[in-house]
Image: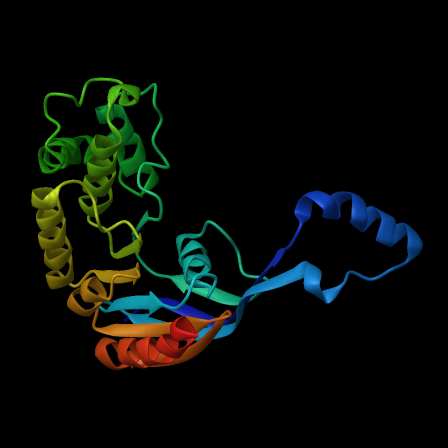
Length: 248
């Protein structure tokens, strides 16, 4: 079964949008066309499939299109052309804690976010004790989130996203969560999810983590797929390509 399918996907963004609001009207009044440089292709005609249970890393330099691809998978953005299909319950860790509200308690935030991730209210409440225990926040779960430290919020967000039984889990540069003991706990949790056949798509510049966690890697450059294959080979090719540029 296919968990994720990208079919000839392109996504563009307008540059200098603040100025473009005025400049666009002026160009329209004068009958001028928008200059090509005003549009950035974040992804250009990208196609790939991720099978159920696969662990896939998206790699590439900053601006290559990795986070845009994750946003499209998460449904936070829509492609300009092409099609993105995702099958199953999805949990995304694109920015830990971004969906939490400071005036709600930790427990209320967990229930709300679990519901947003597709759980029923009953399922969300049943998940609360194990999420709280995983995060190690039993003493603070009834306190407003605004009283939490940044580390506590990150722990709660990771625990929520990985304990709602997602079919597809998206991770964007947020693997270094909390102290060393909690990071080990996170790694074990991700290994458990992989062992259960969950699908994982990961963006990270930490290649040691990618090599341990992912079976396959897709190298993106300026919005295009350069290479797609076993992680070790793709990472080696990318590092070999990047080394001369760094030296220069």
